[in-house]
Image 1: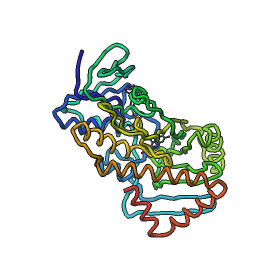
Image 2: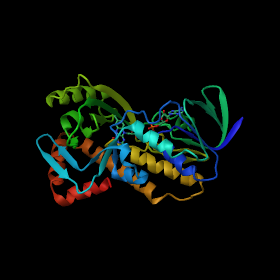
Image 3: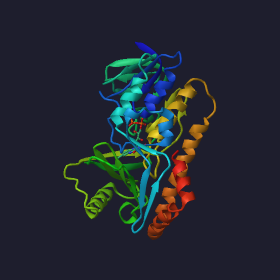
Image 4: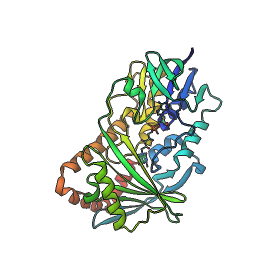
Length: 342
Ligand SMILES: Cc1cc2nc3c(=O)[nH]c(=O)nc-3n(C[C@H](O)[C@H](O)[C@H](O)COP(=O)(O)OP(=O)(O)OC[C@H]3O[C@@H](n4cnc5c(N)ncnc54)[C@H](O)[C@@H]3O)c2cc1C
């Protein structure tokens, strides 16, 4: 039976970042990915400056560097032209391929089409046949994490994200956020420009608003905006925000497997990168939480509080959204909100 110091399950942004850091150590690492392609995942493909800075991505991975943002409430609009880009759009497959490229010539063995089908103490079973031993196990296997299930940690808090990739060659890329309480309650609809398409989508917590209702409302909103989706591909996936810790003895969780996305915006890539890094640090002997990881926990916690506050506001939610847009027209507030993504 083969044995590795660390087995990482899942090659999304969290698993790949964890492998990248551990690949610089003397440990023998195995990264297992069930799919053939890295990063082929339902996503609007927006990376905030925080995440961009961690990876220092080259230009050929980026589709748009966005400075123009418009935030809409029912009857108001706020427009920002930031002095420097603060959101970057990319194709998830390109991000996956680029991150995987960083593992070449390291001590990380990468296996594609290798699905972990069960876990026992000290070993994983791949594709139902091969047993491989580990000293440390990392679950970076996303929302439906088999590692999290092995740890018997439930996933109770999640969002559902739905979107269309609408074909459209973008000339003046602008990111749009639509706060429309009637359709999206505490959440929002987004428009993220890509090279030849726009990602148009929205999220909600299905415990507070059913995914069926979200879909109906999203279509009403698209109709209202006269957006033609006849040639667009419909996509949907859950997003986990139920964080319960990252270390459980010799087993670790990173990214969405750890429930580290935002319960308000559905953003997850930045949090995945930081938590992948944090798990690697812990395996390499760090005892304390890094400042960056503490910042992620605080960031997610503030966003969850905003979501809950706005949800409880009921009929006043529309007024809160209007107030947010008014505040966004204030220079200082604009900069403050922009900085929270930087
Ligand atoms: C509609 C939508 C839009 C979104 N838009 C954005 C956005 O614009 N910006 C942003 O920051 N976030 C966005 N997100 C969230 C973001 O996509 C996720 O938070 C992020 O991809 C999670 O990364 P991860 O590495 O934890 O897991 P994943 O990206 O899910 O990767 C997990 C990997 O593990 C593999 N895997 C799973 N099970 C196994 C197994 N048993 N064995 C082996 N491999 C396995 C999977 O194939 C996958 O490659 C969006 C999500 C949705 C649904």
